[in-house]
Length: 103
Image (cartoon, helix red, strand yellow):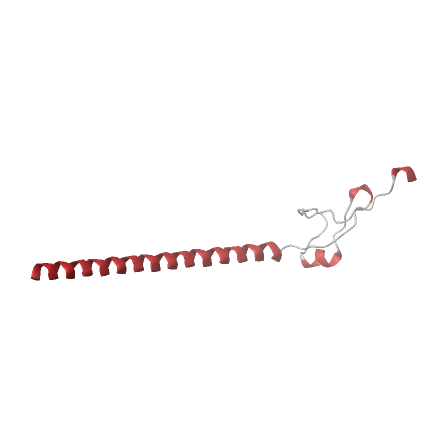
């Protein structure tokens, strides 16, 4: 019965080691996943800050010839001067069109 007892202890020891390895693997996975998630969120917030730090959002009306004006406060805040190249993203909000029959 000594052999059976030793085999039982060996099986129990092997099972405990397997459980410990599985638990450790789960801990490592959770740590890595948490790190990746944290790193992703930091990059996301950094990107948002970059998008909003040097940008302005305002409404303006399209004038004759398709011209738009950048309000003075935004020009000053972004240090935009005459001749500077800027990028514009347009999102139509409200369309105020005259009937062609009025002309």
